[in-house]
Amino acid sequence: QVQLVESGGGLVQPGGSLRLSCAASGSMFMMFRLYTMGWYCQAPGKQRELVAHITYRGGTNYTDSVKGRFTISRDNAKNTVYLQMNSLKPEDTAVYYCNALNILNLREYWGQGTQVTVSS
Image (cartoon, rainbow, N blue to C red):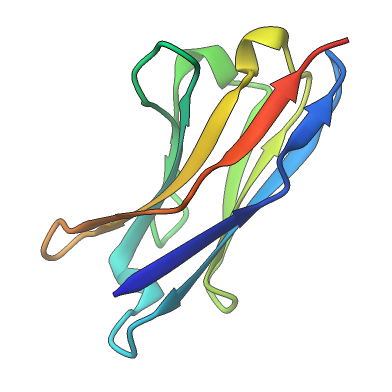
């Protein structure tokens, strides 16, 4: 079993910044390098959608709406993935979920989510 714990959400004004963190732990067999890590968001009344993901070697992919504003990174020594969110907009308001995808067996794990609210 893999546990993902997110932190760093909150209320911020438009144009502000937040940094989300997701710490992975759990099974002794969990090897962080086997996981592509991602951040997803879900706004009220909408489906959960991908924000960004990062491979073990640092390859990244972003949804178009966050390119140039958000940066995903990972610290493999700390089993942690980050999402730096700059120039936040009200439409970024959502619950943000951390995701871990095992590249060998394609099992997925989710965190509990952290609320991000962008409002003046």
